[in-house]
Amino acid sequence: MRMILFGPPGAGKGTQAARLLERFKVAHLSTGDMLRAAVKAQSALGTAAEGYMKRGELVPDQLVCDLVVERLAQDDCRLGFMLDGFPRTVPQAHALGATLDKAGIALDLVLVLEVPDDLIVERITGRRTDPVTGAIYHLRFNPPPAEVADRIVQRADDTEEACRTRLAKYHGETTPVLPYFEAKGIVRKVDGVGPPDEVTARVLAAIG
Ligand code: AP5
Image (tube, rainbow, N blue to C red; front, side, top):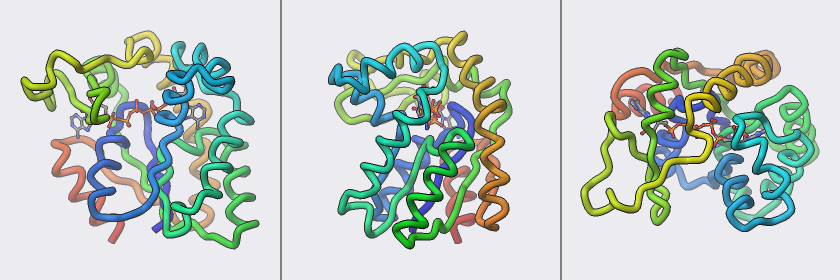
């Protein structure tokens, strides 16, 4: 399976990816996770990306495209991959298309998780993650268990201000990517509102 998980910030892409990866043994390519690892390592990429991410802006296309193209060339992507958070701009979609065409690979599916803006802010500001396991929690919707409660952290870009910038970027720069994939007939939209188990059932039905 070669798919893209698409949707606004906080739509549940990371939450659903973790569940799908228990069923589908494919590589998970989350550009957000890759960029956060680069920031933590203080690499040249991380230093260049950090300010954009903190403000909720998009990291420049060239930096992200180079990262993904290099990652897609690795062995574990041969059996399939799940792109999460990429592409996010029309130039990124074209760069991905060119890379896959060159390798003779076709995408199977672009799965769009749809969640209205008014729910997004609550999901983002309440999100906490476990730095040890990478598990994603929510203070209200999915509280962390007591044994990890003292080590959970909040992402630097999960403030209300950065969230609103991310939403504006999503509507202004990311949704215009969809017609590129709709023209290929591979877009499926799923309602991302409701308990995570219900969303997973809808996602699996859409994958088919
Ligand atoms: P990235 O890490 O990709 O962030 P994002 O797309 O904004 O998505 P999130 O990780 O915030 O949300 P999610 O959809 O994974 O939701 P989650 O499952 O955690 O990118 C971060 C930054 O990196 C960008 O702003 C940009 O600067 C940069 N970047 C990354 N890719 C880039 C690219 N391609 N180009 C340029 N820049 C790039 O869920 C959210 C919360 O809701 C959690 O607390 C969860 O527990 C809860 N939740 C999930 N599902 C449900 C549900 N069904 N009901 C109730 N609560 C739920």
